[in-house]
Image (tube, rainbow, N blue to C red; front, side, top):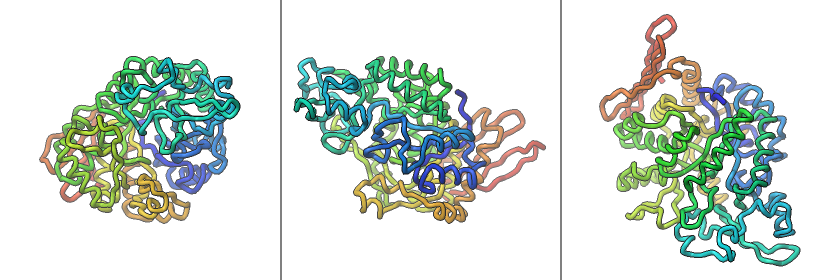
Length: 489
């Protein structure tokens, strides 16, 4: 499927207006010519945790959000991107609940990775576990089967509770593949055009490895699921937080990827007033990437930028972001921390707040994102120039809530009156409509406190100029009449 080279929105199903119907109302009323590229609706399915990322099933929509007809209606007019957590499903799912009742006699028993699928005797070996990239202290959870009172241990890569709410699926199982096929067919029926493969890097469990992006095994699954998606004209977007070389392998394998390096590089340039690292990066990166500045988690640091950043400089930058109100997500596994102890996984904040609510710097950052080759996405809080939500962190104890505020329709309409928001909308419209963005991209060498980026196609040409010291930015572009216009952002 050919994706539109236009800006997409990222939002939870209830974060703009309260539900899917109100989201569609806002899209049509205020953003009809803004998010022509589409909308990434974060998991709208019934879920038992992690704000949607522990789905019970993919065949239903959480009733408080709406129903499949709401997704279908949004998808009739613009691309809809939904998540599929290929690595895991909720402990409360009907599949795992049946397994909890009947154990190995359940028709769904093969969906899950009991430990004997890895260790023949079913007993975990600490030496093997020590080699793994862990997201929790132990990669499995223990359950008692209701009917037999037997104890079963199953693989659980993620989860803050013990036992975990997120139960890993066995992607090697033919039954799981049939389940995925059912999910994809339902997506197609309801106008879903892009599927993000969330946590796909963890799907292969193989002893003696890190159990993260295990090659070549992972490509066998990726090739299989891509063939399935292609048959339904659905595009795929694997989501992998890893060393950039792994991302690039996915790109070379024909997949769209996320640019998890760009948000940090732009932030670094805005804070240090030095463009060298950013412009060097922009000269040498795959173009088939989705770009963003902010999202529902945070600004990636490790492992995404391993080998690209000096940890002393990174620590100074991170410390500055904390002074500005950010909080941090940290790496758990000791073997994946730097030798000097640097262990920052993500910087959690709103992008507007981390730039000290400076309209000029924020718009300059967005302009650089939009001029970077790829498909730009704008997170709903960033769209409305939202600020850090400290109250929600105190209420929930979850640092990610700093950037997950919900907006009523009145809140959205009030935010739309902000000058910075109106200027951002104008910039998005320019990015969507100017023909040169389908042409050739060039980074123009300039002073270290400046950024200059150029796009050219036929008679159309536009150049972005950014002064990092002031944040002042403008675009020079040609009109159809070959007049040169200067657009101050």
